[in-house]
Image 1 (cartoon, rainbow, N blue to C red):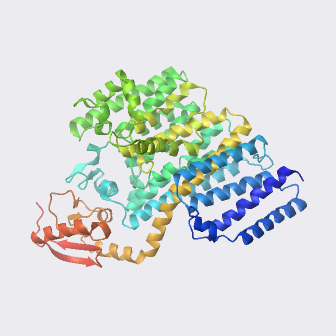
Image 2: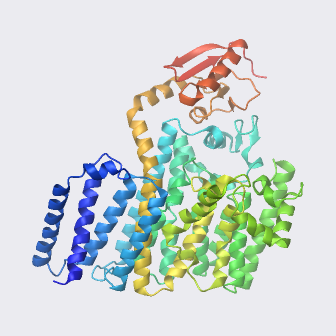
Image 3: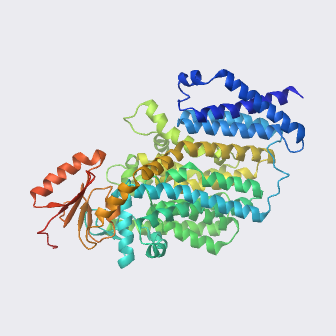
Length: 594
């Protein structure tokens, strides 16, 4: 047996033993105490035993035993175990380097292939279906448990919960808890796309339906992505791997950590736009172009960028021009409506590009006549931040977005494709609004669609061994980052609910004692559970009066609730009900609706 085989089997055995030692230990491996806690003799004995087992398997099953695949599997087990035991982003980057080196070595030897494993279409479809269900399950469970553990605030989940209640009752998207008075949500953001979820909400009228709907929508992006990959000639096995990367791309799950937002429609709808364009099915393409525009007033920007790509890169002048006109006309129309009848366009998020009160036009003028200034802002977080904070903000955001994809979106010699990188520059990096370059918010969903579209196109032009290497790396890198970003949230909310399930049930029961037709002023985390009513205000913002006041006495809300309690008691409210220093309900017996 060659020295290389000895080395590979030793490394594989060591990875398995080291993973097992990490799993059974309660000590952080970042601490030298962990090293001292591991019995060297037992560690070595198990290492020799596993090595011997590999030799026995090789001896009796030479045709199916492949050292390189065992090494690859052992490395994957080890790095995922490491990142699961200690949630550190810098460790993740270091482990990605290790994975890249190992998988590159194996790709050179062409041992990453699974050519003997047949993967017909029906197996691919079943695999995509399973991936879709798993992705929707993880995302949905986190967001549903956020609601069930009273962890979802009024801004923005309470707003959307009340909005859907009113849409079910009156077919209009009005709220009272968004701006402390009766107001159409479309005066803030024009999002008619929400009506696509309304039939499901009418069948299952619960805030949980909204959380599940968001999870299903995001996970459904695997279907157009698979068809795009097949259109570009990528094999079934590699297409399924790409869809696996998408389904567990941490940015998708992390973007739901503050509950449902209209942006969740962007990822699947944009991917369908890209697919129908690639298949030259222009009628459904235009349908989905309009659906994207209906997501939000700024969604037309994504379509305009895609139109520029069609024009400048693909030379489809008729369709590119038509799509550009649709996006521009729609954008100008809805922004004019918001300016005249609504609260205006939220240009404050780009205030660093606006001189004086020049508004949206001023921002566009800055981008057009002073691109040098724009580039100075792209990698600037805030003038008050030091260099370390600057690096951690926007450069770390870029790593979160690109590293799970192996930087595939930028690995192309066709510079015209870089047009499709404009969303991450314009929507995310240019803004001084910190949430837009943070993966834990919804502002990355549209950008994600463009990155995966680019990844598929660039991957399709690589040689087969390189494709295998890239997708193998992306799959493991995504799995590690999923363990780093998503699984802690999943475990946190799962444990939180299971440990206090009876408490949450009783909290809901006491809230249910408030009449459905009563007006309520409520603490932010309790508000979504009372959202099925027409008059509902958040206590912190309201200047209105109501028949009932509901105060949250859990944890950090005690001080605020105590202040409100004293205020409302002085105004004639009396204690209606309370639950174990968690919820206090006050009632105004003399309240009359004006």
